[in-house]
Image 1 (cartoon, rainbow, N blue to C red):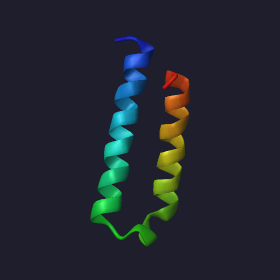
Image 2: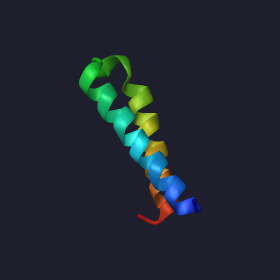
Image 3: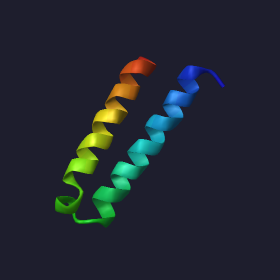
Length: 50
């Protein structure tokens, strides 16, 4: 696998985790974590060139 494929897989996994947290757990308990994960996902997407 090349770097881009790995980054794309990580972005997809982070999106799944974020969606799961938002759907299954009251957001006020994990606001900071969801925010941090979103930032990480966006940075990976920047690196991937999406």
